[in-house]
Image (cartoon, rainbow, N blue to C red):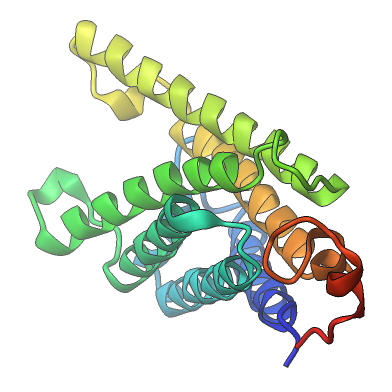
Length: 227
């Protein structure tokens, strides 16, 4: 089996998950304020299982992309761990539904919140580590991934800043910004970065450019069979 195949499967599965979540968002546009309500609000309604399915597909697709990057020796240990952290956070957010905190604390809601935070923090870190532009091999998809990774970092930094502003003024952090809009902006940046990583990992000629073992290209590398 070619080493790029898991990335192709990952792109397909992740794309299906993204389509499911986007479809839910568009279908409920008249009923849910996208500026204030977060994406995980879909998990509270009768279509909650559809939302969980979409997030689960995105997580599984991300794992497949991570496997492909690791097999090609592109992700490194820290990049792989961060990317798997994103996938694990997504799975936790999908399995444990969002909670209405106005009625009191909830274990399921707490796990959902932690999973969401882990996912949103891990992906920018993974992309910046994996797609760093000063590595030996460059491609357009890699540079696009890095660019969206930096955008994601800026989104996260902006959210952190607004949380500090809210704490200083004694306001709940989710009321000092249009949380739904901000979360969607962050999600778009992160998903775009993930898909760009998948495209980079799925490139057929990748192993020929970098060598089968990640080393420099030599005549032996070019003539040796790649499996």
